Image (cartoon, rainbow, N blue to C red):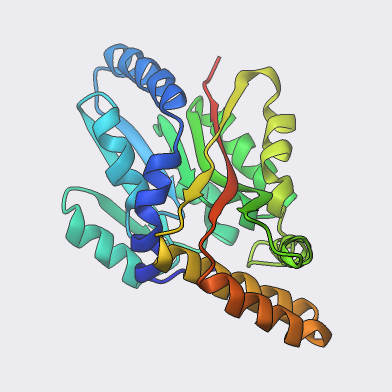
Length: 259
């Protein structure tokens, strides 16, 4: 999977507004203790980093002294990240095949934004196993949880959502994707060590570009799965692009600190 820099830029503000400050504060407290114990900068690896939105948001909220490595399969996005943040290291890698190699010994924090709903159950198990072997913290944010809500609603909203959530479970390059099941799957793997919080996008009537991008993407996914309904879905798309509505898109942030 790869995403355009335009889309990543568009979503950045909604991501930042949605993220859990409580989990970030817990992580920052742990990171302060970790850096004092190790006497070195906090070694952070950002998986599926894209153009670096996650790092730009999170780095100012962690204690000073950080060494970031951004990992992604898309070299163009990593180049954009390096232009924006010249101090970071970047690594182009196929995370489906090279996950363990992307997380070297000495990593203190593994983080990912909007990633684990794209991966398979087996890949997620590999991630947790490697993080545990490292004795690292794990912060996974903005995982889609299958919920959307329009106010006011349209009669076709629920059918489009059903098709979109089915599409979310298709192979995104990591095997059959967990889609909306990703958050609960990570919680089961990590047990009582995991804490989580909602990080829902709130899209208002005036957020025209974001609403249009989501509606276009959802309509395309729904039509791909059910071409026989293309006419009705296209009409829903046309109504919804300009719909003066409030739209909530459900996400989860999850944090696991080492014992």
